[in-house]
Image (cartoon, rainbow, N blue to C red; front, side, top):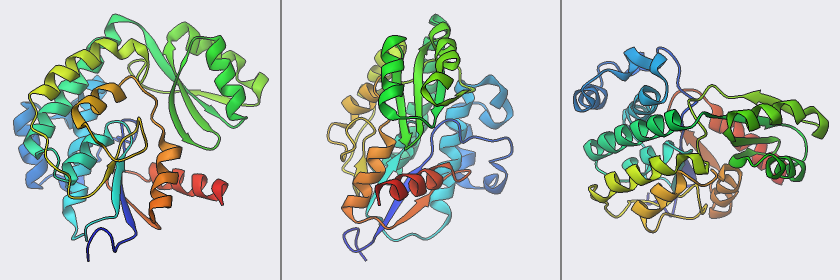
Length: 274
């Protein structure tokens, strides 16, 4: 079976899907052991450190989950933020060892950028998309994630995030501040994007074995290096990405990583679009 004959799309989660103990099923997996060796530290023992450890830990679990079973070539793949790196590695566009180093550099750069300017993220649940966008514009917040109908995440300076929490009820939303270390997918990540761009220049990129959709465009990656760096500052257009996978012919969605957050977003998005 070729990728053109299957209807399965691979989904790879991003930061926020991590959990204590998520590595236990994979402790003896060669990819996890090699990843820890390359990192020079065990990120699962340092999850309390935040972004710096969350991202490489989640990447390693996702790759072990992907490699654990025998899978036919998928129709396509997509990853949520950090998950793009897992998807591109699964597709063979980035070598595993190169990807470990790249994810490590990304996590470090994002953590360093967050320390330069206090920022955060808030999930706006329910309400109308247009009202959330209007509130974000009023507060100078960035659209970080359009995850599914009724789930939009805003990002920016912490005082503006707090103002969004205060104003959520007025536009029919429930606000939930996210447990993250900074204002990801916003202009406050510009220093991280610069550092990531430099790391990407030293990373060999190959032709993917199947299409991998980019968060920034919702289309298959073209210029992987450029798009990965730019996507650090752009919204994760996950709702549109799922609709694009559906339009490509996807009917089954295989989430490679801990939890089932992405499968839940698939159900919400496709149900609303039906």
